[in-house]
Image 1 (cartoon, rainbow, N blue to C red):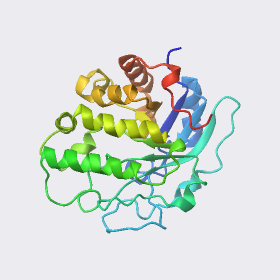
Image 2 (image 1 turned 180 degrees about the horizontal axis):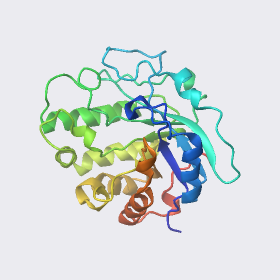
Image 3 (image 1 turned 120 degrees about the vertical axis):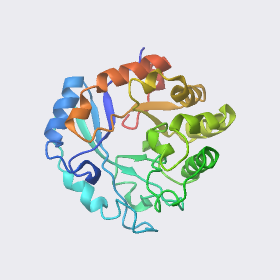
Length: 266
């Protein structure tokens, strides 16, 4: 059976600081989006940094936004067809510290990790501009460090793996960086992703979902047995407008079926 669009596991609310706190990005409007799309599960994944974890620099944008902050979105509205879940988007700093501690694993229903956030000099990368080779090496090191952690991978997702931010403060583009990583290295990585049971996020634009250089890692992930989930990464209501087209395009491009679906909620 073809992959069914019945969830969005990466949604930001008005609490997310980088979006300017748009008041209309509230749960009532997000629920309306989910019901319009026929979705069963919606996860609010606002940016945060767990105050109990190490903060290595004042340049950490989210250091003031901990668990007590993101749970202000509660209580969620209830609906017979569509269920909200409290999650978060966690970061990794330049010393490979994860922004979520073990004490919060049971309190969060879903955790996405943005190893691809390489746009913050002094926090996620050094101040110096890097070559494509240096950035590709750093990026994959971050991803392997994530796999070396003790996270509850059955409810962890790898956020926007191929996004443009992997090339921030770098000499090349995200495609240049992806092209520098060999099939063999991707296979080693995604074989481990499949083994630990972590989900792989799909949220690219329609153009990206038609670009073979962008699709290559996901094709390899599928061959390795990885499971995929859909995430809009919407920070405002307008970003929901093309979600259906985006999701359909990537599902078709990867020929995904229900057997390929990541199911953190059963």
